[in-house]
Image (cartoon, rainbow, N blue to C red; front, top):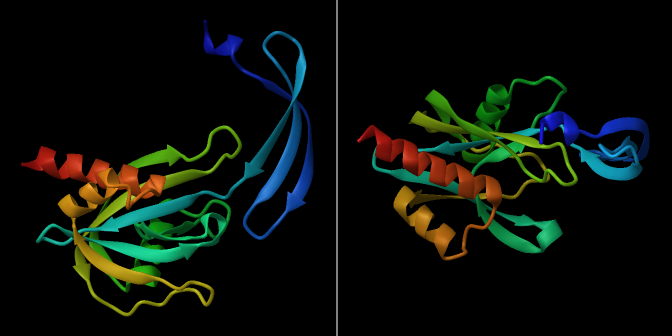
Amino acid sequence: MTDEKLTEKKISSENVFDGVLLHVRKDVVKLPNGHEAPREWIDHPGAAAIIPIFPDGNIILVKQFRYPINQVTFEIPAGKLDVVGEDPLTCAERELSEETGYTAKKIWKLGKIATTVGFSNEWIHLYAAEDLKAGKQHTDTDEFINCMKVQLSDAVKMIYDGKIFDSKSIISILLLERELNNRK
């Protein structure tokens, strides 16, 4: 089956809710078989995430409380794109500095993920950072974050032990592990 025979076409669209971060939309689409169906989805500005890695194999994870799941999580530094069209690399550099205090001389892209394709258009751009210079953490006024250094191999174990369950962090850590193993 060709992609054309899978594609839905938007007939109409309405705003259901416009919040600070999320914008909920309700569209009506024409299905490949000619019928119509509703599609509710979240319009998200996108985000960037970055793993700082040190020469000794340590990475930085951030611990923070995530209200929607009522739990403290282990994650890599990340944040949303602040303005439409913001360069994801600029966002990653900002989040690295804000959440950890570090800046990096070397940053490379690990990949890009669509987080929840069934109901959101959010893309997260994933980066790794090396050649780090320490500075002072300067989080947003509503962010409370603890940083911790962890060996990359221990972070991988934390994934398999269920201690790291944030998807962007899991994917980034495993991509970084593969990248570093390929360098050997």
